[in-house]
Structures are given as C-alpha cells and as structure tokens.
Amino acid sequence: MAKPKRRYVCSACGSLTNRWQGQCADCGEWNTLTEEAPETVFSARHDLSSGGRAIAFEPLDAPSEALQRRSTGLAEFDRALGGGLVPGSAVLMGGDPGIGKSTLLLQAAARIARTGSSVVYISGEEAAGQVRLRAERLGLAGAPIALAAATSVRDILTTLAQMPPPALVVIDSIQTMHSDQIEGAPGTVSQVRASAFELIRYAKENGVALVLVGHVTKDGSIAGPRVLEHMVDVVMSFEGERSHQYRILRSLKNRFGPVDEIGVFAMEGQGLSEVGNPSLLFLSGREQPVAGSAVFPAIEGTRPVLIEIQALIVRLASGATPRRAVVGWDSGRLAMLLAVLEARCGLNFSSAEVYLNVAGGYRLTDPAADLAVAAALVSALADKPLAADAVWFGEVSLAGEIRPVAHSAIRLREAAKLGFASAYGPGEAGARCDGAHFTALGLLPNLVDRILGAA
Ligand code: TYD
Ligand code: MG
Image (tube, rainbow, N blue to C red):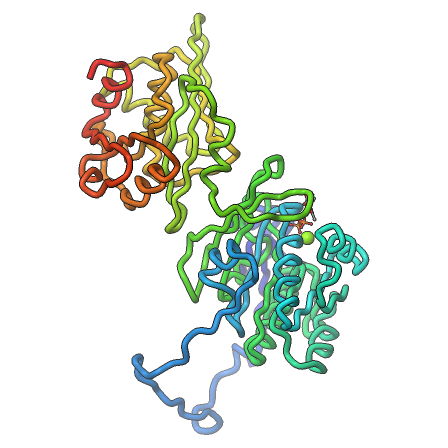
C-alpha cells in the first residue's frame, strides 16, 4: 500500500497543502499550517464486486412533506431565517465578539422554551453562572431552558441521547467544542469540523434544530473552517458597530429560504429589542436640512430601509493632496463617482477634501446608492441643502447616465410611507410610483442642474 501522504491544513482558512510552509498561500496568515491525520479511508480503493447497495432514484416531482418551521419567538430572527427554524437543520451564527450572539440566542431559546418545547443551551465559553446572570438581566431567569457548561462533544451527545430530542440545541460556541474522535486542541480546523459533524449528524437524525455559534476572524469570515459553512444548512451573520446600538442579522446562505433577508435589533439594557421599522432608527436625529445630506431608500433582501448619506467638502488653499475618506461605502466607488462628476458635469473636486459617511454606522452595498451619494456631494460642494423630504436612488454609469435599479416600487412606497414627498431616480421608475412625487433624472448633469437650481 502506498505510504499515506502528509497533509497540512491552515487553521485560519482551512486550505490544504502537501508541504509545510510558514505562511498560508491562500489566506496569507502566518504559522497557521498544522499537520492533519491522513484519511486512509479515502485512499482505499473500492472493491465493486461486494458491499454496496443499489440506490433508488426518485423523480423530482415526487410529493414531499411541507417544510415545518418553528418560530423563534422573535419576528426579526424568523424573518432573517426565512420564516423560522427548520427541525433537523443546522444554523451557523457568526459575528464579532461582544456583538450579542449569546444574548440573541438566549432570548430566542427562552421564548421557545416558554411555548412548552424543550431547549438545550450548551455554553462552552461561559460558566453556567454567567449565563444565568445574563438571563436574570434579560428577565428570562424563569424560562425552562436546560442549561449546561460543557465542551466535550461525547458528553453532550451522551446526555442528549438519554432524553427525548429537544426542539432546539444551542452550542455556544463551536470553536470551544472538543471531539475525542480526533487529535488536536479545540478550535483547530480538524476539531471544529469533527465536532460540528457529530453534532449535525445528531440533529439530522433526531429532527432537532441546531444552532452553532461561530467566531469571526479579523476580515469578517467565520473563523477557521470555511468547511463549516458547507456543512450547515444556514449561515447567518450578526453584525453592527459595537459603538452603535443597532444590530443586523443577515443570512448569507440558506437552504430553506432566501438569502439577504435581514432582521434588525437594537441592543439595550434589557437585551436585544426588535426593530420593526429600521428606517426610523437610521433616520433619527435629522432635524434641520443641512448641505451634504441625502436620504437613500436602500433594499436589504426584500426589505426597504431609508438611510442618510452625509458628505462634507473642505476646500484646500494649499496645494497639498486632498484626502478622501469614506465610512460605510466603497472608496473605489466614491473615486469613480467624483471622476464622473468632474468629467460629465464640470464640477471641480480636485483641490477639495471629500468625506463621505453613511449614518448610523450602516454599511451600504446597494449599487443604487450612487445617485444619493452624488446628490450629497453636489449639495455639499454648492453648500445648498437638499429638500428635507426628498429621496434619491439610481446607479450612475461612467457616461453619467442614471441607470435603472431593482425594486424601484418598493423603495418609493417606503419613502412615501415615512412622509417623504418627493423622489428622484432613473427614468422608468416613475411609471410604478404611487405615493411620493417622482421626478425622473436621465443624466447626472440633470441632477446637478436641479440641485443648483438651474432646472
Ligand atoms: P454577548 O451576547 O455576550 O455577545 P457575543 O456572544 O456575541 O460575544 O453580548 C455582549 C455585549 O452585549 C456586552 O458587551 C454587553 C451587551 N449587552 C447589553 O448591552 N445589554 C444586555 O442586556 C446584555 C445581555 C448585553
Ligand atoms: Mg457569547
């Protein structure tokens, strides 16, 4: 038999190599490659003359059971999950430390437990006393949750096997779990993978909804194993600026529903509260019209959220290189928009510092933000406030055209609902507008004329 090959696995990204190196060639982290036990099972040749059983094929349209979902008791959590937890499924919940993962899961676990279903909460990071203290602070101490501090997967599965399968098992966090099936310290890729595999198998066999908390690395991906993301059914990320109150729960992968749906929460003294109308949260504090502020109707999944974009332009007297600083948007996109404004509209930003901020610590990825950013920039440059009751949306091309974007009708409806009387956007959106007064803008110079009052 051939000698089993040595394999090295990166504990940061999970990539495999045949040779040890100081730096991982895939993710660039140093000293993360460790040797992994060779998987001789896979190198053994299959003998097709014996063993195996023929599998039965099924047509795609065979009747299947409707998906049963269990509400978490938190409407925003359910929304992000695509309707609730699916029994027999595994959810991976990632997020920065201290963002509120344990708080969210404890709140959901308590609500489910109070409906009479059994819930198991295993904490590998905190002692049971700490979790109990948090529950007291949240006013949930009376909820019938089965709580334990444990890190051995074997102990956990042995315990679970002795009781009727609970409705929900929370493992906080998967990086602290240890499986004795495999060598290595908790948190290494092979340990995380093996622990998750055993827990997920238990969940699938017993129809239990399993939620695994996962740590997040500096760059925001779920720490260690990308493989973990492949093993689970749903990957969620809990995000937000720790200095800000609001938190967004986003689904990044969902085998049972749409992705990009978000749930919005606010972290308060009594734990996380649900924010049914996020636009109000992000727009709060806008009183007098100020130059450089524009409201953008963004879309998160299927949900509209109004967001304020702020621009500040400072003219420089000297010939120093002016700064461009962006918070919450792509800096490359800002550079592009400034170039289009210069080239197509004759505006001059080259001797001015440009600062752009998305209010509330929100991160915008919607391409339709271009027009609102352009409106904020032109308003700041001219020192003319935009109408306080206007929203702006549309994608800007390099030629300076304002391009149509998805979900115009939803954006307009949300703006009208919150009392915005006028909306500016790409040409064809007007036909579908019902609430706000809509003005179609075809080219970026039309926007500039309108703001500068020439139109
Ligand atoms: P936690 O759920 O422990 O975060 P994670 O599990 O993601 O690491 O939340 C920790 C933070 O939340 C902590 O810094 C304090 C804050 N917090 C509140 O503001 N209010 C509360 O009621 C609770 C329980 C926590
Ligand atoms: Mg925690």
